[in-house]
Length: 348
Image (tube, one colour):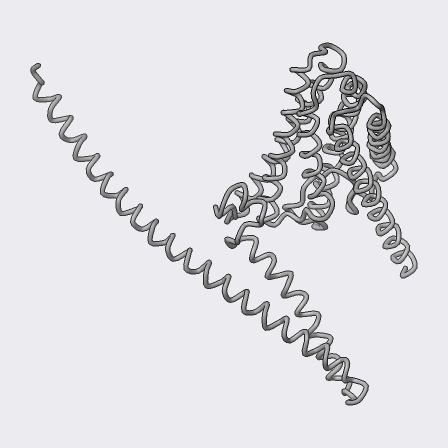
């Protein structure tokens, strides 16, 4: 094949331009790796400094407590008492500041993330990435809530196949497993999910897995409609209601500077949801007592002579744990918020 001189010269010029660009890319990448090494060293230095400060502050707190205990024998001047109080307040403020710093530093994964992901660093190092991941988590919950609602409605009123029920339960297992992983990553990045609301999804994962393995039979059919109707109410209606209500509350409180930007919508009732309490609480408590009803139903089924499946009693125990955890945690949060409001009104 013959090449025209004009075409060949253009190709040579194009190659020269590409060579220059390639050299720039190499230089930029070399600089990037250098900066990355510097950032890694700074991260290690900052993490080490925070660890040392925490240790020394802990020792100082113990020393201050000893001073307080010895206050009876050795009288302190008012200035010394004020100094001790100021130091204690500063230690508390510094601890909060360290927590904010650590949200942007790599940290070791917890046991669950270590088992699932290994020692992969899951810390997102800038606010934009953190917010993007948090928003994607919220969208994931909303989309899966809609899908699960449609799926449970189809199984309850349209189709009656064990294979479709198994697919629905498999989707529940995958959904709750994914939530536990994503929430663990969010906790590593500063989200303040804790207590029962973390454990709740582990129990739900176990319950969905047991339902998935429950074989077809008379007892399964006896509980099937009650289970699917519960899913329609709890996973579809209440969870959808919670998402929109809580996201609205969080948006307002963040705008007022009263909530952390990495706070999430979670299942159950939180103290920051006090506004509009009478609207949401009845739906939550109805769902809690439905879990108790499911548990009692399953325990009665377990006492039947024809009951041979271990899944019956395991599901019953799981629903009982969910009821007790949800009900008493919600009561505790409501009581604490009520007492805080009473104290505020008295101080006014």
